Amino acid sequence: MDRLQAFDENFFSFAEMLSGAPGGAALPFKAPSLAAASGQPYAGENYAIFGAGAESEDVSAALSFFSNRRAEFVAPWLPQTPYGLAQIFEERGLLRRRIYTSMYLPAESMRAGEMPEGVSRITERDALRWGEAAWFAFGGEASAGVDSYKRYGAYLATHKANAAFAIEGEEGYLSTALIHETAGTVGLYYFATLPEHRRHGFAARLMDGLTAALAHKGKPLVLLATEAGLPFYINYGFKVIDKIPICSLTDDI
Image 1 (cartoon, rainbow, N blue to C red):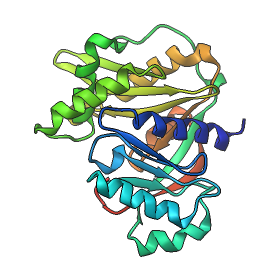
Image 2 (tube, rainbow, N blue to C red; image 1 turned 90 degrees about the vertical axis):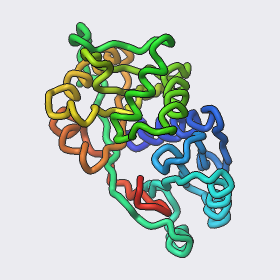
Image 3 (cartoon, one colour; image 1 turned 30 degrees about the vertical axis):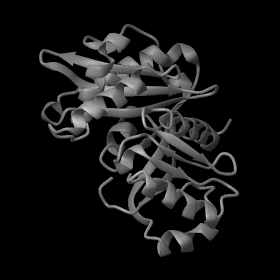
Image 4 (cartoon, rainbow, N blue to C red; image 1 turned 180 degrees about the vertical axis):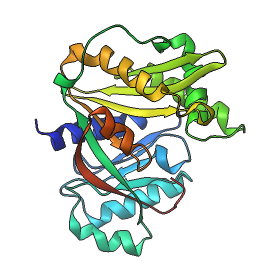
């Protein structure tokens, strides 16, 4: 399996997993393309992914699918997304809002060892608390949305294909991470630190814990890095696979 195939295997699987969350749903197209609604209204939690063979009708169907659910979504423009979809993307307002980077860390770069101090795998008992920490780590505010996101986070943390991790501080979880595993890969999602605790080395410590926990699997670790996170991953040793334009109806992703 090459790097691109490794990323695709995990990313499509991750999106399908999101559709099983409370209130979630999936609209499959010609495999592996799909629209995956997580039950959350935020663009970054919902995906329309168009692979080889996707057609303009699929884009229209995805737009209706999310509109009916009153949910925003993102449509990553993958290397295999048919170029013929560019016109309908532009016509329907699915414009490029960001450019993310698909990346991988080879299995041989991960070293088994002791879990760093404060890093732990989340159990069912702490799943709601992990969901709350993820909400605030990604800039969420104290509002009615917290309770819904806590339940969503608990689903993520306890799904059979996932493993959630966090760093515990005196006041609660400081950093969060979610691993999604497929047959040939492990993928990193929801990797973030609470804003008031950033630039204190917690991201590196949590990544050390993740690689220690995953080394025995012998699988590459893949992720989709934001512009802000890219320098950290490069410094840690991740390799670039490709640049991925992120298209959406909204700039708030």
